[in-house]
Length: 499
Image (cartoon, rainbow, N blue to C red; front, side, top):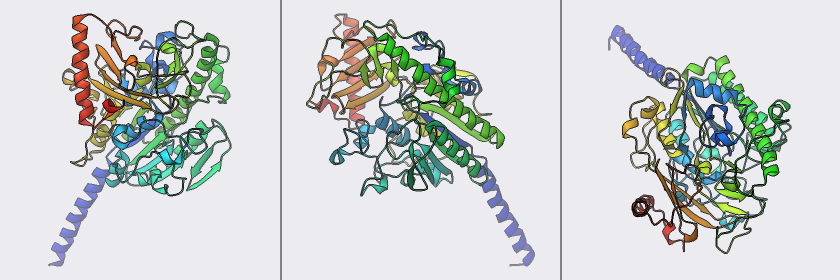
């Protein structure tokens, strides 16, 4: 080939390569924040939403800022209201029952830990969104809590997050650690670190952002906080200050242990303010590194929380917060440890905060009322990163981009299917079908725990109408039951055979 034409060919080819690289560089970075046990009512920006009228106003200026600068979902639900199954749905876009994970995964040292019954998310049987983004050229990191298998156990090394799509990991090796002076893994070494866990995790996340900013490819940082999971104290003085002298409002429920719930409310909100303060540090670092304009920030939690609501504290494995346990059959089985537990699929256990900020792509200040779920985040992340899902991957959600860009509200299907098979502390095999109008809950292990709520007239879920004689509602119950069975059949859910 003539030298001139060879030079031109090389220049043209180089131009294509440079152009492709430039296009790749324009893909957004992603900061994906997942808090632990945080209810949406624990955000100032959610004032006026359900549950917020019975709690004090939390000090969350950075969550509120994110909501002002992005879009906030008012009816965003997890797939299962307890840690490990909820995180399976976040990571894979599929229900945890599809991978045999029913309840939280006990860690070594936990009183319920049994190595013969240990469940984990097998990287050979699952595909995470982090894997797909990594394979598409993203630099990926996870800082914080994974809780999908303890890789420190002999023979279980494959469950490490770096085998699930993450280039970098620093954080908890199992489900929990203390709020201060925690045991954390970094560079493959687990050791005790001095300081508040919330701050230590953020310190490392800031380091990841600084490293990622110097690289050429876009990045994904999954930042999974430990807080506001209990134990809540200690916290930084500035996080405790707004609540030190507060006499907090608490929900109204017959026989509620008000003094205990008020104490817990102050501590829980202080822990949440610690999360908020550190969210502010991350947002400030994005600004300092000039990354904010090309970084998607997603903020959510693994599941919701009750603080005296419905007479309980905690989440799907709720604990009675009343002076005496209310009468009734709430769980059965051979593994029931205590009657203090109230397995549930209440909205306040299912509902999670969800805020998305993407400058230039999503209108700021939106509040979206349509029902959406954690299962929708996997396809949304792929759409944002312009990554195609494998054609044989059975994702259970759909991209949120039409809602975020105001295109498809009229055609959005708001029917929700959720599940919780409680096997620790008590036994329940609960499935839920929910629409904006009605909610049906079946416990396939205990039909005395079946529930039906008319959410139009009873959004607080106070009156169980499962035994109603109203022929219209009886037909609604039957129709919803049949649709529930269809949803279960679609994912191979055998809960109806629990008995």
